[in-house]
Image (cartoon, rainbow, N blue to C red; front, side, top):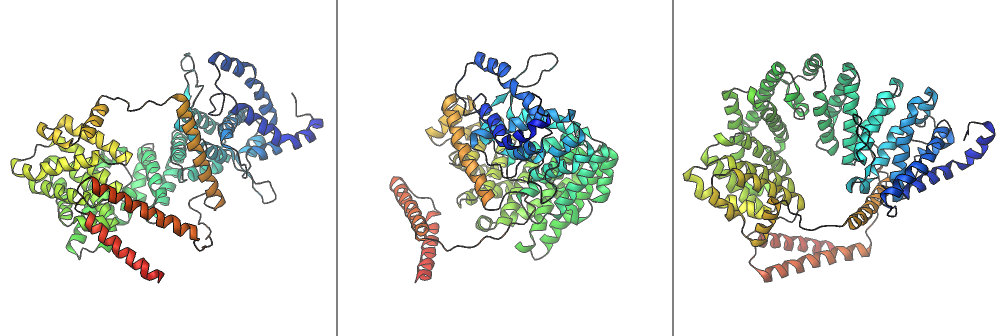
Length: 594
């Protein structure tokens, strides 16, 4: 089919939308689409060889056709959930064919719309990341696609993530440098976007670019990312993912560029600590690692000592948390380079800070919660050299804090320390203080209703039980038959419930519908796009009567649930305090209404 012939151009111009939809609809009706009917493997292969392969030449002929490009990459493309995977498939097919096309055709796909009079379209890179983000159900199942032959071996099915990552990296390797600005923009936008799996794909692709490209290109990208981190205000999700990317890319830098990095962002200057907390010193050459570790420790300890010797106000705590984060990074990635005196100084500062923590104060102050979550892994690093009295203080505070219902990240930090307690044989003088607290912490966290905490509790308890010499403590942590059975099933790697393939696929479709609705809402509300761009302010609307009714009914249901719990058994010690606080809050609301 030769559509380059001028006589067919007017017909194609009006048919691009239909051709695009035809391609998507056909692929949505065949595996691995979640919405495809069940087809035997033999029929599936026959359809792929005879029918689907016929669509390939059509795409080849349409590549230079601007109306088709504008349709496929449209910024306003609103596809139904069953067409998201076919759209990804189409974009991958385009990527595979573009390297053999002339420069102007490649530019048509990779640059996006440049002028206001053009039909708004994304670059191929941005469209691919967006299409990938919309395939949440297919990624969770996960669906499998044909892989590539390896050393003459047969194709092995791979996940959608693997499939897309391989084809994207191959396309990046063939992308002319003139298209790098669009590529870099799409990579950064995806890294700091709202989808974690899309951010990971962008990081993997970016690291491939750093390895495949020149050492100078890698260094340039590292310096840009480092500057972004330094200028990123406060704590946010974007700062975390940029820190992960920087940590990975520093391993790819040439040694002389690593030296240049330490000169551009000197570790001996306190203003650079927020940057160095994201970096693993294992990436550096041995000599440079030792030098940087000592400089970071010196600056971090100075920050802590200045706060301890001053007024010790919470408002001045954030720099201390940054210093603790840096000290933790040094201990985890270069602890073997620190002399005994320096290690003792770090432990001394951590111990002094720990003594100042109080359970009730930590439960209500996010900055102190961050301090706690940094001190716990620092103490874990020095677990064999901790003073017995400090160990007793740590577990007493942890137990009292757990009674105050701390946030999830505080519970997870506690579990990391608990898992390492198996390495320690507790001195006789503190066993009576620590063992009851240790068993209480494990029993409470193993009964937690949050699946993430419960899973980490199972893993932490397993590590503790396998390593501890206090064997009599293990059964004390399993204070109910239900918890005991769950632990046994976990150790035996037994599944608690088997889900059929059909039921799982149906659940993925339902979850995907929820994700698609959320993404659409973000788009409508103006939250779509780069996180670095400020969002437009939205009008504030007065709440309606139904919203008040819904909120009051939820409060009534919660109180009824507490009433039923009290009928079944004794209440925890903190419940009375919480109820008094609720009573005060209700009185304030009543006065507001009046």
